[in-house]
Length: 296
Image (cartoon, rainbow, N blue to C red; front, side, top):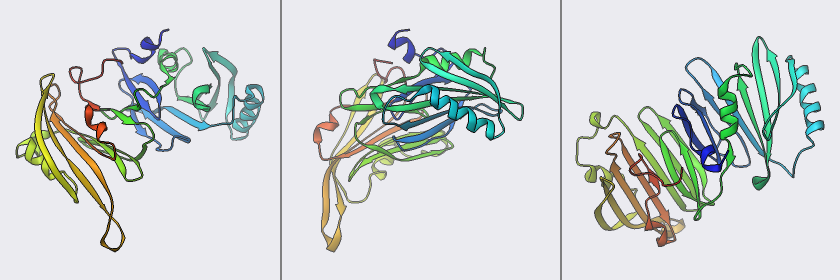
């Protein structure tokens, strides 16, 4: 399977990119739990009935001793009350085992991601070994590269290219709102998606956008651009950060873009505060096929 085939989900599958790991899950699965750390963490997906998938990752010193690791892992699972169903199985680069606990079948698959020096484990809950979803998710997984100085994040309806080195500092998921904030020191990027617009937007988008500009921001430029049938409102200036004794700790270039998607009617917004003015050369947030990315 080629790289492009792995990255392009089936029609009823949904693509996710998180901490430079990419995978596609069945469309009815939603990410309900996530971790902000790139060194170790877990993301979990559930359908309307139960949790179906957990993805765990952690940095390691090098490739594991699979035989020894599986032996220790099996002993630990059995001691915790799980019944061994399949001690060894394999799908492509994934090595796995299956257990049963309180009637629930649990399939665990692990692989070593050499470019990241990371051990990744996929845990499928309550799914039969012959289910196509298990194989499809495993086949879709890959570690993503940094491209043009950016990492791509895709989740909760957001599809953003974030400057490499900026870590996920905050992720807020609420009804009709998704927001992710990335930061490195005083520099930051914010990506936002807002729904149910007709129920709360009672003013022109430009007026709403101006009110979203943070305190201590001096605007120097305001304009609109059109791209692929979307009117994008742009605000640019400098953002000051207060320090001790009434002094300014830093002064950063600031740019915020906001638009209403012509396809889904939602409002999308990106805001970047950076010492490098060149970061404002291009839009970093996609909303639909027309205003998306060429590579999938």
